[in-house]
Length: 275
Image (cartoon, rainbow, N blue to C red; front, side, top):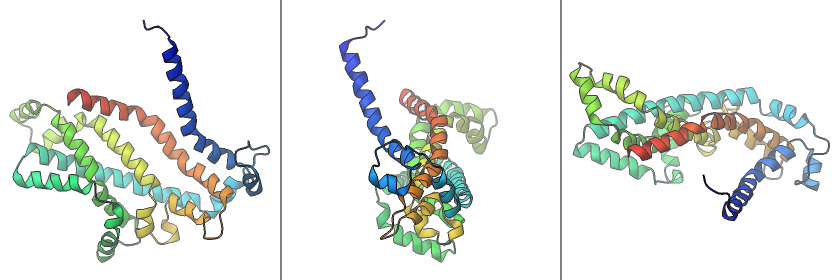
């Protein structure tokens, strides 16, 4: 049994200080969301003496939160489904059927990971408009398929490499087809990595502002980040309403992350052991 030493105490104190540092933004957002605008300007660090829910009710109505929440949910869910299907199947094909062309395609996917979004956003908008997908949820979902598929393919490619090929060969000997091998053998083994991909993509897509701002223009199609941005104009900053809207926006994603964070650790551990 390890002894509790001064070094352990120092490390624990340091860890607590770092945790408080990371939690400080949550304190400012949540605490100030219950204040009036005047109280926020006077002292944003003080506790809310007379907390009020008016900010939440007003923000709920102004941004039409149910509509923005529905748009964010639809776009995030269908983008995740497509990304998981496309990337897992593509990674399996590129790895299990090695050829010069597959190697070049995989290299292009890896190279795409380092290309900044700002350099492709104008061509992306033009292609989306040319295909008739501008100003639609479907267009935004397809854009996420193209822009976000590189990292999942890279992750699945590394994870599938750790799966013994002899398991798949045994299934083929027993009469399983190629698609059956993937659906019955490989896909269940990919659950830890699939959970990791889902969480990473959900955090990114749910909080994304730039790509929805380029594709979606109608007020009824706005996602939560776009709706919240309406509280900030060139000469106007409605911090009281914006902070309440931010709490409403981050609450679902925080619950989602806390409920599934163990799968991230499990996926990383599984990959490191098998790799």
